[in-house]
Figure 1 (cartoon, rainbow, N blue to C red):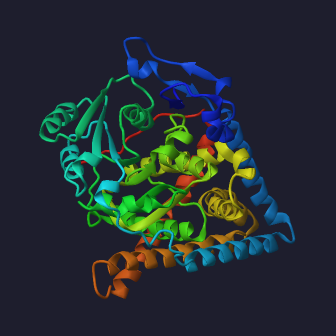
Figure 2 (figure 1 turned 180 degrees about the vertical axis):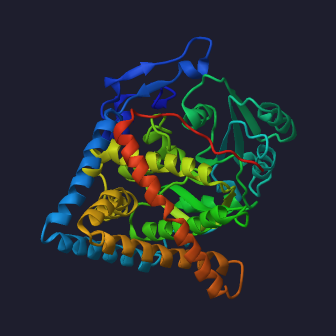
Figure 3 (figure 1 turned 60 degrees about the vertical axis):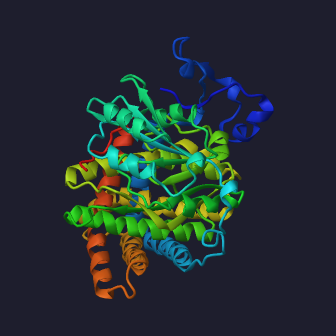
Length: 475
């Protein structure tokens, strides 16, 4: 399966920005394709050795987490270690919550129409007949000069009516271009986006899911953030359009409010702003330097996030405008989706840990990345051995202070995020509705402990998985 590629051979000097991350590209270049496939024949693959040995690295991390947790229960000073960790987490989270805008992401100026950059909007679609028509129609009718943006819809080997619907839409909208990929094209969503990028011309590349819902002025409001030369990408807030469906969709709506609040605050603090796939805007120059979308991962957005930061770019996360998407409505579908997100997010730490340990990231970004690795992965992965030891030794789980702290901060962050969203719609958001929403969302978020515990164990045992499993959209 292909990893990163470039559409033409570059000189060593032109490769220098990427060599800093991936090493000498001519060590492992492989030409793919045939004369019958001119797009494919142009591709050259540069392999990064860090993708190898994920299972072994995951097993080492898993063994360290379990043995370390068990050891804490037997050490007389184990609780002091936990209290110290809790204090560090609390201090970092408090700084994140209190971070104020420094004018980086909140103050932009209007750009004259003739100076607006060109934008390519990419939508990868596989069996999306239920949602593709309204999404493409929205994207083709944005309030942006028609000669300054294009829409690329990639039919990724669909077996339903998606191909014919896209062809019909292409006849209706002159700024829509359709790319059909065969069933054996490979690369999943990353492969589809990469193939379209060989044809797209935009200075800024925006990626949307096939069920995306956007406001007509989204480009006018997002593009100005790229005025700062160091901004490599911008992620808009995601919202759940079917939030009133049931407990799971309401929980996802609260989760997105929490995520948007945290990402915006992390960006303001100088930490790691993250891409979320749907509603992500990337400077093409930054994308080229980082090797486009990685086909060796199951979460291209999280992988690209880390590569952009390692290459010295910043990612701005903004709460408005938002991109709407369907939330999954069933527990089993939520489990599969979150398991894929967890595995992809975990993979990037395994893949790039050597580069993270070097001097490519600022101290603030390293601290932020470490703290959120502890919160998102280490503590949930340690929950099982901690609980087992607590039962055996008839005592409370030793990591309870740190875990309890993250739960409290999640509740507060969810409340602030929800209040911020509602403030844009109402003069005075109802505080009791906000608190109830945050409480329900916090209960919902406990599923993450089970997801992480299962994912970290599975990655340690099972060989590398590159299967991209799509989320079913019902419209």
